[in-house]
Length: 367
Image (cartoon, rainbow, N blue to C red; front, top):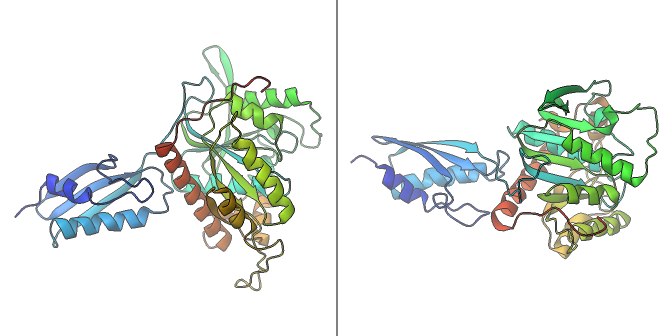
């Protein structure tokens, strides 16, 4: 007896998307069902190419066909992705960007830029279209971390206006104020000038179509943060901290800022950087020099997602200094940690887009 498409869809209606708690058929995640005798093929459209549950969903689909349709069925599952978006309005800034993600820290020196760079490269490696803006106006580090300090910016003309073309490396489009100023010259700007510079990185650049645009914010809570949330609808924020008590106190303030009633940007999660020190000669050893599980405990206390832990290893620093982010080295345990955090973050973006209202740009007076 031949298998029918109806039987395939009926069987797959028993497979639940673990995060969204609905079946794949209801969510319209099943496409291109083909049946020939006992051969069955179909495509599962995930909400992100970095989905950490990809293998689990694939196995569940195969098992559903074998269990509910025919134990002798030959099942081929094609896994693809269409990144979801929840843009609130047709915003004139960044119209082709599906998700805008702020990467922030309450305190300087916790490795926020390192995390932002490696998350961007990690998602690009999964096939996502990724961009990165270095909004740390006073201390731009992105050109060094990508090894593009001497890169010249090119300009495209469109509709009578000039647009900067982002520099692209490792599959990530990027812009930084560091491309526009002398790297040896200190940037001494008042808040309004810094805010204007950030807006120009949005409005005067040709970003094209992106699944994720990361904004590497300066430490603390100030003008740049308010400029961001008032200029564009931010999908969510990722907070970076070390497990140290002093850093956690500032991280808590950063989370509080995004959760203010006047801002209401969802917090996608907390990343614990420098979670432990592992010497190269003792790869199995962990020394908790800044404390243990501080961010993990804070995430539980504040009821925000915990995205994962990044160890303190020399290769992460070396990768940033050499312009080759450590996540590019698949054999490095730190790369595995960054890939896991990137997958968890992308998962939280998909959940946020499926369950929450769009973020509105802040309109409050004084912002």
